[in-house]
Image (cartoon, rainbow, N blue to C red):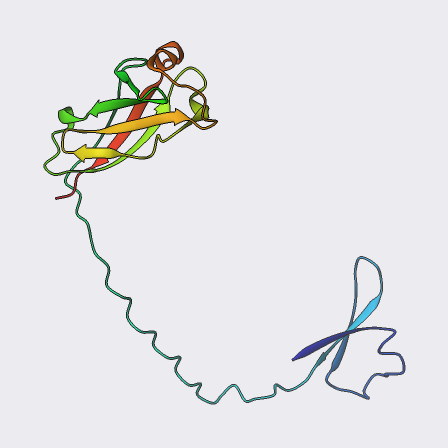
Length: 163
């Protein structure tokens, strides 16, 4: 254990009175500081107990990926009306040649106003050759395919094949 005290705290201490006290002068401010060393509470030469071994990790399921592919639809094209309140699009991923139904992730890109949409992450009817998205405006106002065409909206997608 090391204790540091200022010269004021060490007032009255004189040389030789405490052989365990060493005095040094602070080079930046000139104040005298003392460092007092005292024996440790426990001996350090004794063997310390071994730390407990943590239990092994719980095994997890491993997914081996055969193929990862990505793509996007043509800007403003392929959008259909969905019951007058929203739009939908069938995304063709057949060029990726997935062997099974992949896990898809999608987002919407475009020139403007695609931040107002909701539903772009909800994948429907996924298969090895594609999926469908249904979109609507987050404020509930009318949305039609002409909005997608005018704003150049397109679907970005990534598919991860499940072997």
